[in-house]
Structure formats: C-alpha cells, structure tokens
Length: 178
Image 1 (cartoon, one colour):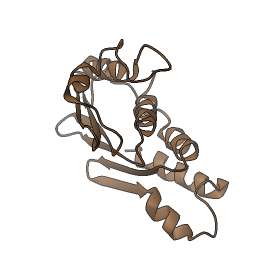
Image 2 (cartoon, rainbow, N blue to C red):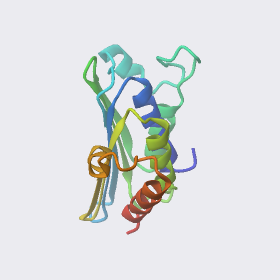
Image 3 (cartoon, helix red, strand yellow):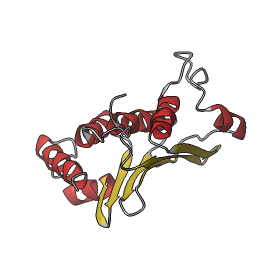
Image 4 (cartoon, rainbow, N blue to C red):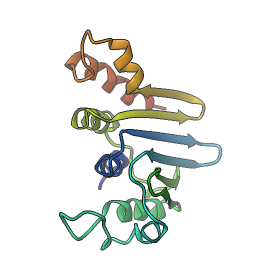
C-alpha cells in the first residue's frame, strides 16, 4: 500500500467485516515530539489473546475466503520503516484497537494519501456503520461523527447524497492540511 489512507481503509474494512457498527479513527501528530499515531477502535467481535499474538503474521487470518491476511502485517512494516511500531489490543465480544505509531518526519514514513476518498468509500460502502473521525495536528482538531451528521440531516436527505459527500470530502481533506 502506497499511503496511510489505504492502510486505514483496509483496517476499517476488517472492522466492518468483524461486525462493528461503530468505528473510531484518530490521527494525532505532534511535531514537537516528532510523533504520528493512527488509532482505530471498533466494537466488532474482537479476538481472543491467541489470535491477537498472531494477528500480524501474514499467513494468519480469520477469513474463510482466503488464507492470507496482509493488512496488519503491511501496516506494521510501514510503522517499523518509520522507526515506529504497531500494537493490537482486543477483547472477544468487545472490540479491537489498532495503534500504529510513526516517527513523523522519518524519510520512509508513507504520505497520508487521499483520506477524503478513503472515508467517503467507507461511508458509502457501509451504510449500517457509523464512523467517528478525529484528527489532531499540533492542536488543530477536527471531529466528524456520522451519527451527528445523520441526526442533523433529520431525514431531509441522506449522508450518501452527493452534496453531503462533497462537503464531507472537503472537511476530511482540510483536516490533513497542516
């Protein structure tokens, strides 16, 4: 994967396949500490401790449609290439948290990519799932909660309306400009 937005897209798609109906994506960058963190939390099925220990092995997957699961192993590699690390915590029946930490200025840190398109794809492709997107770039904070947006629309239109999606795309893209 060429950029971080595609890693996020992949991890969140796994969350939705694990039955999550709420996924929170947090992106935090602190230039003083030279730190970038991506934290993805879901309320899906979760994993037992044995699976959590093996989850970054590319030949381990809970899917029955294929024998490999490259997503988390590739995200772990991307973090390690930027002097970072990946942690996975999960509890069966509760959900999972994926935390990828990077040296923000590292020359090998992947670019963010098109976060707007990734988030729009997630919203359109998972109408029964709500998303909370938070970014914090040196104190410049953005929060987008699809539950609040749906409530604000109050049935007059849907979150999949092209005008709503265009507005959301702009907010996602603006949140990554620093």
